[in-house]
Length: 359
Image (cartoon, rainbow, N blue to C red; front, top):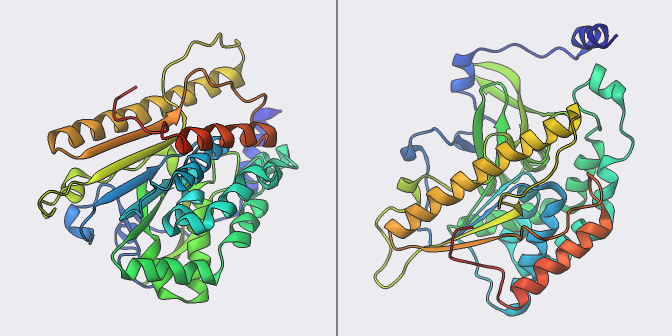
């Protein structure tokens, strides 16, 4: 029955406009070059000003409440910098625009992650969507959440900060090309059209679209005169946290007596822990995927730490402690998110959220 259902699902999935690898390699969005780059692009394709401080926000789903708590507690402590570059992946991609714009949006982030609105994202699951679509939950609520908080005024403010030389980056995974896409949200915002606002929102939603949980986001593109739709999902599939290439981060232009500060805010636990895994398909798959993501995250953290030490840069890391209680269930449990937010807030307000040592 399952085999028949899956075969039927393949037959009933909405068709896509075909396009080639050659067309993908030259594709543009909004008919504008440079709105996004890929992590495997040459450094010369990136156009970045001097980077003094860099905040990288990881994925983590409901655990994004930790990062929001840290940011808000950091504001309360009065020591939160205005970052030259902010990058966000998955739940970090939802946080990134507001973290980029500063403490004036602390209340907005707190509302998103503690009011209970996030819990509605996983309402009304349907096996029919899996069989005849591409996700257990529809993405309408996710799109509505992004649209509710990201309007023309956010676009204007991001564009204004971009003009000052600051950069906001959000990461998605392009499933067609299997590449990590880095979207220059400031450049998109600077376009200033309704189409740019839609793209800005689509990128944020795509970055948080966990495969099989939410459907992919299809983004209009053009390559070699041919129009098609690229399929983008959660940036955490290929990059659980983004730190930019060494050659881009360190360009030898830092003024004397000044050094770059790198902050990696991980919305999850990164220390290994023991757990007796149930011998069931779902639990084994879940634990395996969690282990893969944790290993990728640790690898990125270690390589960034090594790079920072070799070049005498500031390295700062924050993450959820291994002994912090696990959530009572999967999904966006409001009580858990409120407690996790408070945990992150209190650590940051007390000046204890950041460490310069590896886990």
